[in-house]
Amino acid sequence: MGRYFIELAYNGANFHGWQKQPNAVTVQQKLEQVLTTLLQEDIRITGAGRTDTGVHASYFVAHFDASLFPFDEVVLLKKANSMLPPGIALYSATPVSDDAHSRYDAISRTYEYHLVLRKNPFLDGLTHRPWFIPDFDYMNLAAEKLKDYDDFTSFARLHGGNKTNFCHITEAFWEKRDDRYVFTISADRFLRNMVRAVVGTLLEVGRKKLSVDDFCEIIESKDRGRAGTSAPPQALFLTHIEYPETMFQRKV
Image (cartoon, rainbow, N blue to C red; front, side, top):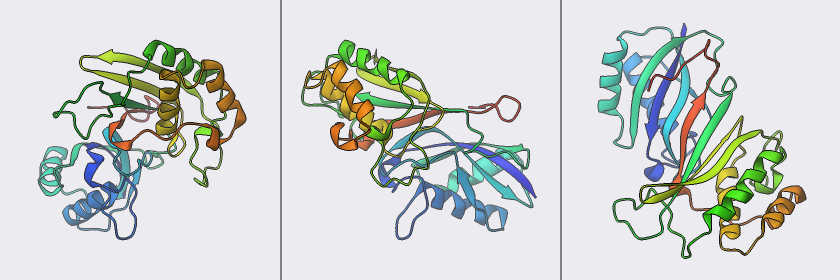
């Protein structure tokens, strides 16, 4: 029996998130079906995290165990991608140590949230267009404050089942990229719905409904009811997952 890390990407529009669930089409479900068929054994996949319905991953890592690996990597990828739906692409399959874990061994994760300020038919379903023009400089002042805190209960989904609401945020900023504005946030871990709640609250700062001090008070209150409405899911992307170099290094 050997363990393998796989790298992949998916467009979340047609999936009810990553995690397998009854009576719903998910990314995990589709991958397990394809790999079970190819490897001729019951394959169970563990993901580095779980994205919600409609959220995308331009980069994702998962692992599975298999007793037999009848193809080399190139052949496996070709066969798997021909069987997977268009919204999922498998990029690599790498042998790792038996105790390597795609979720628990990840040391950082990065998300991006993409905004556009005018209608763009080519970015429909991949961005969010607010009805106002946010003050991005002011939002960056608030975003910088995120790195001063470690308890993000105010941005956690109520009854989300988190064992702890503590996270260590290492970067959080808005920047302009061509025809869009992108919010990048990196941390050792994220709570369910956390990034969308952060973005929704920052947008309240960006339209001057909240001050930077108000934003800090919301974090300190540890009250989800005081934070803003979660931003829509279709503009959120998981973009990077980092592991100890001695265990696994990104290939794509």
